[in-house]
Each structure stands twice: as structure tokens, then as C-alpha cells.
Image (cartoon, rainbow, N blue to C red; front, side, top):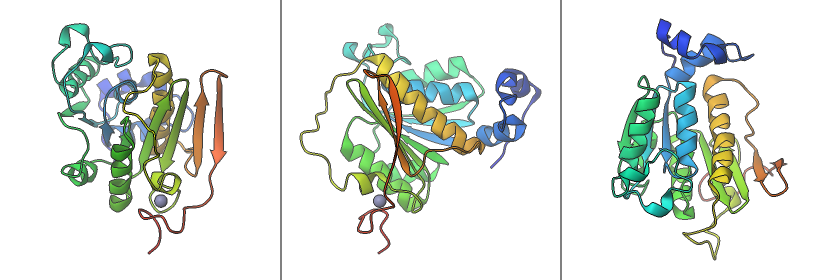
Length: 249
Ligand SMILES: [Zn+2]
């Protein structure tokens, strides 16, 4: 769905309207789009900020729990004075201040069985930025079921991975991880600059997809290594035939 651009939109986004292949049509598509961002921490926060800067129409931010002191090395939409406040609300406040023309909807709970269908249902695209595989796989399942594109972002220490899923066309997250990998821990090492870098790769995938820019790495896994400073695009095998989520059964 395209939205009409106002004179103010043309002014705000004038530097990106000149990007080859983007233009007013791409901007209008972005302006008409709703994105669901699952968690707005070290990954989802910087990602949502870039979507807001690019002029997406509507952002739905799902994140449970209050802000803690030890979130502040990476959750850049937050502020120290907000410790104890719900993180979804804090993120929404920062994004609205940055770009008041983006409609921001905070949801003070994580994506789960009880809300996934509704949240994915109202979005044109979903960004999975949760630290837990259970949450990422649930969002993947719901996106495939609803036929909505998903950009799944993950990181650990100096490495990050981004997978763009076009439901039933390219491998989904469950094709790669049929089950939650053993030994995955809730708490893992993070430098904020690494999670922010991975977030930007994910944000770009989404912006390209929504604006119709092309060059989306669907069917491949983007692997960022901050230690070696490399970004690899690893071609994936076709969708796994027996995939419980996207397999043809
Ligand atoms: Zn699959």
C-alpha cells in the first residue's frame, strides 16, 4: 500500500529520494507500511530507529519488562533516567521525538502464543530481534502462516546473522533450525556496536524489501564477523522439504 507524500515528507526525506531506484515511489511505499519489531533492545532498538529515520509509516514495538541498568550498554533508544519504566514505552518516546510523523505503537509484552497472530496480522513485515530462539521461531511460524516477510536478526559476541524470509519462497528460520539449539543461553556477550551493526543490516533488508529497491538477500544467510570485519552472504539450500513450518505438506 502506498501513502501520499506531503510537502514536509519531501523535505525530510529529500536526501534519500535521490538514491537510485528509491525515489518518490519507494518513499510512498515505505510511508504506507507497518513494521512489527519484536524487541527493541540492542538489535531492535537501532533497527527501529533506522526505520523511523527512513520514514516508515507505522512501527509496532513488542517488548516486555522494565528498563534495567545493565541494558544500557546496547539499548540505545533508552535513557538512564528511565530505569524501571517499561522498555516498549521508552523506545516509543525516543522514536516519536525523533520522527513525530511515524505512528509508533508500543506493546509492553514480548511476542508470544497469545499475541503473535494479531501482531503479525497488522504488519506488512516483521523484524525478529529477540534473544531467545523460542520467540524467534514463533515469530517465524506466524509470518509463514500469514505470508508476511520476516527479517530475523541475531548476534553473539562478535558475530551476527541476518536471515530474510519470503514465506514459502525462501528457507524459513525453522528450515535452518528445526529445533531450539541446545546450550543457547538467555544471557550472552554483547558489545552495543556489534548489535547495532547487525541491526543496520537487518534494517536495510527491510527497507529494500518495502521500498522495492531489490537486492534483498532472501535465500541466503548474511553473516557478519566483527572480529575479522567481514560480511559473508552464504547461499542456502532450497526450503527444507520436511520443514514443519514451511514444508509442503
Ligand atoms: Zn521452513
